[in-house]
Every structure is written in structure tokens, then in C-alpha cells.
Length: 67
Image 1 (cartoon, rainbow, N blue to C red):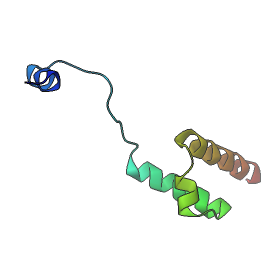
Image 2 (image 1 turned 45 degrees about the vertical axis):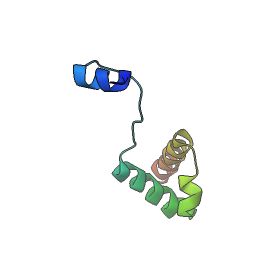
Image 3 (image 1 turned 90 degrees about the vertical axis):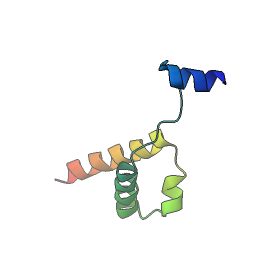
């Protein structure tokens, strides 16, 4: 048995692995940026996660100033 299989079957906790971003949150971010800046879906999805979140934050700041 491989070390990975052994750790899974023996209940050993491991760290690491891929954690995905919730798809509904991703859709919200893409729609929000596309609506306000008229960027394409591909352009928005090609942004790094942190960069995309930063744009969402900046758009929110603009919207708050307009209220």
C-alpha cells in the first residue's frame, strides 16, 4: 500500500491539496466586474484571485461614493 493510501485508510490528517473557490462566489465577482467595467468573461477569469477581489473592492468604493 502506498504511503498516501495508508494515511487515508489509517485516518492520518494531512495538509495541502487543492481548495476550490466556491463557484457561486466566482460568478458573482465576474458578473459584478463585467457589469461595471464591461470587461469580457475571459479577461476577468484570467485575473489572479486577489486581483479580481481587489477590483470588486474598488468598484464597491466607487458605488459607495455615488450614494
